[in-house]
Amino acid sequence: MRQVIVRDARPAEYERIGELTVEVYVHGGLVSPDSTYVGTLRDAADRAAKSELLVAEIDGEMAGAVAYCPPGSPYANLAGPDEAEFRMLAVLEWARGLGAGRAMVHACIERARSAGLSGLRLSTQSNMDAAHRMYERMGFVRTPDRDWAPAPGVDVLTYVLAF
View (spheres, rainbow, N blue to C red):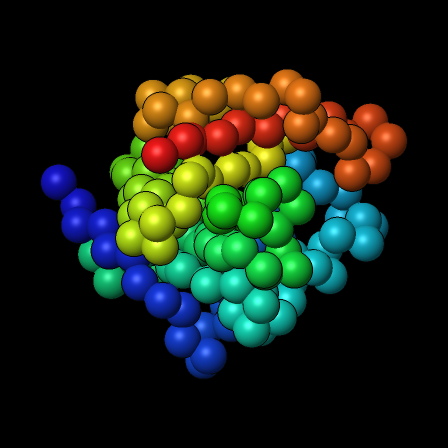
C-alpha cells in the first residue's frame, strides 16, 4: 500500500497548490474556466494566511490539498462559532482512490476535535457522488437546510460531522 502523509503546506508550495486546485476543479468540470472562482482557487497563499492549508503526499509526491477553516476564518461559509469547516478539497486524478482525500478529511476532523469544537462542516457540489459516499462513510450527515447555490445552476450540498 502506498503511504499517504498529510502535513501543513509550505510557502514554496503555494503556487503549485493553486495550480493543482484549479486543475482539479476546472479540468474536472466542477468550475467553468472563465469563473471568477478560479482566482480564489489559484490563490493558495491567501488560503494559507486565512485558514490552515494542508497537503497530502503519496510516496513523497503532492497528491492534493485542502483548506481547514477554524472558527473565525473568512473562508468558512457554513460553520457556526463552535464549528470548523473545510474547503477546496482537491485530489489529483492519478491519486484518486489511494486515500489522499480521506486522509485530508481525517486531518481536518482531528484538528476540529483537538480544538474542542462541536463539529466540522463542508459544502460539496451535487454531482460529486464519490465524495458524497466518502463523507457519508466517514460519518458526515447531510444538512439540506444549509444547501445553497454560489452561482446560478451550481447546487451545493452541505454536510456536518458532529462531535
